[in-house]
Picture 1 (spheres, rainbow, N blue to C red):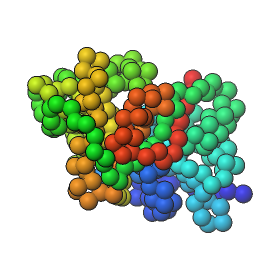
Picture 2: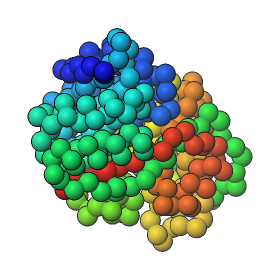
Picture 3: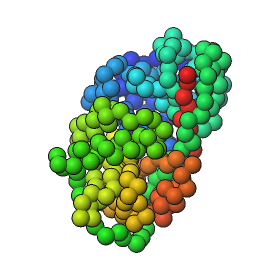
Amino acid sequence: MPQLRRIDTAEGFLARAGPFLSAHEPEHNLPLGLLGRLLDEPRLYGFDPAFVIAEDAGSVVGCLLRTPPYGVILSRFESLEAVDRVADAVLDMHPGLPGAVGPADVVGRFASAWSELTGVRAHLKVRQRVHAASAVYETARAPGTMREAGPDDVPTVLDWLDGFAEEALGEAPHREEAEAAYRRREADPDGAWLLWDDNGPVSLAGYGNPTPTGTRVGPVYTPPEHRGHGYATSLVADLTVERLATGLAFCFLFTDLANPTSNAIYARIGYEAVADWDQWEFS
């Protein structure tokens, strides 16, 4: 029977669950990258984070973390039975949980258990795929060049973050959330906002929240009027080359499985599928 352990700090959680997460680093790039930030800024989103580890015979078989007000992030689980126990264990910690994200089989099991425990409706919001690149293929280059976003670009970046939220996430644009996302990335010493510039900015990409040997790329957004020219392809390719040249082993990114265009673009660059992750919403 899996045993559950609650952990109060990112340091304590990493000490116990870090080896388990790092054994499948590409799949766990989201929690690993977030944990790196939490070590330096425990209340990254304004609230205390929460951590739970599932163990069997002294070995970690799965874990979750949450940075309120957002939902929980689940790792892979060696035992789906442990997922049910985790859902029950965090009920008193997060009675108003808005959602969950994680490996497709795990988060689906969690969503079902959560719905049964609470009576709230759970619905699948986005099917995603985790990709990793350790090298970049030669691709046709778009006109223009990559550069870092500067102070004069902030209004454009914020507008495009609103556009990304509306198109990719199905969320109504909220300028304050875009501003908060921009500031968090700007404050990340290992991250940046980058633009592809062709007589002006035409495409946006960010990176940051490094893992032990990699970094996560995203969001990536090209406004409709600039699509079809290969700008995002060239931007992500150059960004990936630059990050790998610093000594990183991987760059990671998430794609929406409902968007075949982006999945094909990243495959041409050199990104390979690692795992399917789903995002569920509770209401």
